[in-house]
Length: 427
Image (cartoon, rainbow, N blue to C red; front, top):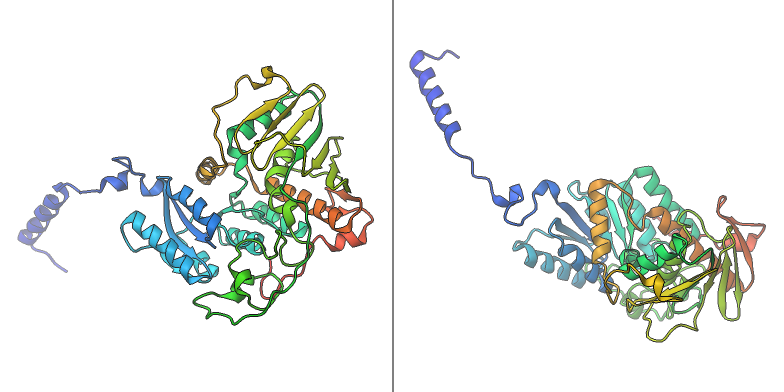
């Protein structure tokens, strides 16, 4: 197309005038006025938000660099409540609600996912999320069986995604301080680690009275069960939350019980104190109503129910060395064999808030560093708890090889390392 001189000059002047006009860019896009630039935000989705998940999601929403965009939840009332909460926070209607987690995971704009389903879904949902190219913050227990634990760790090694187990006591000052006393030799050579998981019961799955199922949109029972063994719908079971059995057991195999449910916190602290994030005890046995274990380095682990200081709070631990000891729990206080050991402790924080742990996860999503409760640490804590459960379930001593990840010369115990997953759900 030909252009004469007059048209050329008109076009040139119009282009120059337009380029001289200032571009108006919102302050939020530049990270001004206390906002975070979009390039620095972590776009978050969530899967399975009930009681615990609601609390942890609140911790994420408090962080200025989080943009929450989607919820996948099998119960209509819950997914609607999460959507309304997010929309109210952002002043829009942009949060998308899904019934099926696979629809959420298909989105390319989501960076990270909070998983707070029932424990039957935790490991598989985490692995599936990693395969979808997203980072994971997963509530505990993160895995129901030893084989689930190994599958979880392997998936995050293979994909390079960031994983944080919801064992938030790894980010609380009193537990950190106690662990540092143990790891820096201030207690002398470690001898015995004590954990109190609020119960050592083990159970196998059963069925409750069959009841009419709701519609899939109201509550998707089949998707709720996921990889767990099928059983008929029961409203009480559907609304119970994390546990499939009264007392804390889970569908299939020996149940999780208190050793897995709470041991994923307090046994985890003992693993950390013994610098054992990449290994587990090699022997487990029941004794006097408690669970005993021994590491290859000779340190003993006692998972017990009694003999704690008064008012120490939930999830207490005690670390003993040849020259001293320290004990702490969720009340935030520290008790030691001598006052000198308390020098340098940080301010007390009571309870067990997840804010610090959430912040650690977000920082690692950006830096790609290992989190405090990374996949290896979570895997081995859950193996230790499951191996202990198997010893309790069999009511005898078992020996475990951490390199081969199998019980030594014990076919009966090895059969309990995993369970069949229901079609079509596979790691």
